[in-house]
Image (cartoon, rainbow, N blue to C red; front, side, top):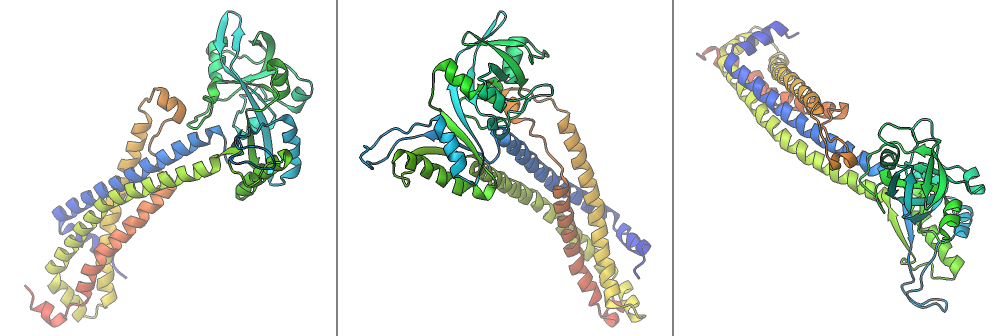
Length: 414
């Protein structure tokens, strides 16, 4: 058994070196945890805003033929029409959700307030896929709205603010779209969003696709939005989308220009890899400081061993085992590292709390959110593991030297 009091006494014998070493470890720990917390904060912030447009979905725009096929010339345009929706739902078992989308830019009016806005005609599946989630007390478009061609609308928070005023509740109130009166049934929850097409969702207005076609006399869809049942079904679903559309029109199913497909799942995967790599780089930069501090602990241990050579020789001569001598100095290294690490983690925690209180305003933060550092449990475990390794290595080599001391030589040491 190694008395802890003896270990502490040995450490305090070199107070100045010990203090400098503990401070170095604290600085190194604060550096690596701050770097990792910064990387984690950026990763979580951008992942959240990247998912704002929808998670694991594809946006499909009509394209054109890239070569002649079946009697049709190169450059023949592909149209997406309502009949495609039912056909695709029946033909693609991997597909969980599907919606057509029509776009128009009419004038909106409520009372004396006017605004031009992007109005989209959509199916009920669209809301969940694109994270158009209504605030409490409202709803999204439902199948009855489509069947009865109801004049109902879901509006973005910016539209609600400009037409109805800050803090108002537009649900149940009227809204003129292209001169026709609609009832607002929902207001989209505020969300962070970096990816978009046609404009941010906060400025959008959504109505039933059947009402949209009647109001604007448009039968073709601008695009489709689809989501597979499982992430691993994504590629199969995309392939079948192209094949079903091609077969229905007598086109070449191998022609990849028939449809333009934006795979947000792949984009989100790449974004995750980029920020994961950034976090590794930041961790390595901070970890180098921790390694330098570990070298400082090793130096203190070597000095301690050199100064206690005679004492070690006496202990070995009276029967102390090598593992006891080895354990003492390893424990000293771990103890010094632990104290410095605790101070460093406390400093990082205080810094994260301080940054969280800093106001961040501007258009960028409106879309992305506050990229504040996050001292997560994962970051803490990584740092604790690094600290343990540094302390073990810093104490092991001086301890091995101490354990190998020859008692006869040690007793002659001044």
